[in-house]
Amino acid sequence: MKRIALALLFCLLLPCAARAAGEAPLPSLDKAGLTALLQKNKGKVVLLNFFATWCPPCRMEIPELVRVRDAYPASQMLLVGLAVDDDSAPVVPFIRKAGVDYPVYLAGRDVTDAYGVTSVPHNAFFARDGRLVISEPGMADANVIRQVVDDLLGRK
Image 1: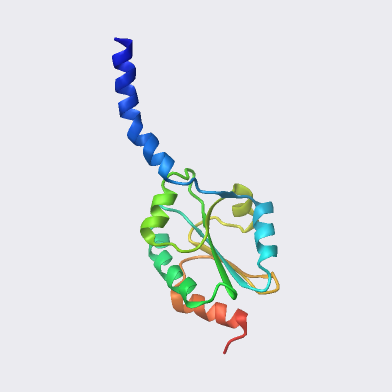
Image 2 (image 1 turned 90 degrees about the vertical axis):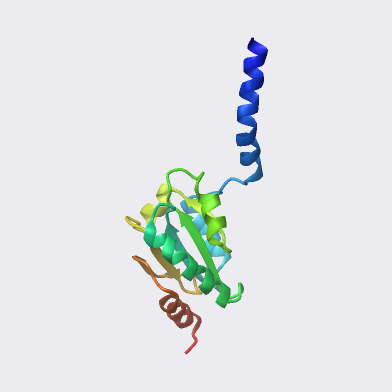
């Protein structure tokens, strides 16, 4: 009887294990890691987008961000998604379904505190010299984001 119960349990858990094995876990990013990432990308305009999978405005903003990311060469602009979800499990399927083509990390509490993130979406822009120039909540459309990036790149 124990063998049958164990076999049944194994069969029930196998699909979950297979699904979990197929998805890479979402990497976390703490304040020290983010500081290193920003330092490594000096010379580029950097946009940090704080979002959550459960946030309707975030869901509307992400396609705009994908369009913006695709409009600039990687040598000029870095866009980083920072998920503020308590559980990372829904984030990987969410970003895959949304067609996110930029790096996404699970933001540590120290990161959200450092940028004063109290609501999402929240966007933070860094100039090419690494200075934080804008950090504010609210959804931004692609035209506004492009205007800020162009200004930071010195384009007219």
